Length: 181
Image (cartoon, rainbow, N blue to C red):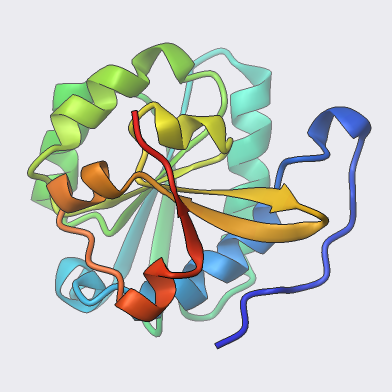
């Protein structure tokens, strides 16, 4: 299993960020190693991309992520749908994830002040939350990415992953940096 792919650097301010296009590619592969992904997703991998209403940075991040998803015929081996949605608040999001059998929620920049509430509401919800920014993982999002020496590295908030029923194989967990709150 190889996750290292070529990465180009953007501006110096974004040097530690993994481009959304690469995040999508890695997530699609990584979902194959989540023992609960197929059961969580069912016939279609439903992906929500959360945005903060009125935030151009959030909208831009969502647009690039959604565009990258549209290039993949399958996500984690399944057909997929994606929707960009304004953050409705933590309890409403948790309900939607349960009701609609959402497999993955991508959290864009601009939602920093909501991360603690989001993590608390997602406890017990069978969904993978993914961070657009690596620092979101420490704040309670399950998975994220960062660049180290020009290579993408996976970050996991293992305690939150357990609360959200995420079950990666041991082989993949060995490749991740565990982050805690």
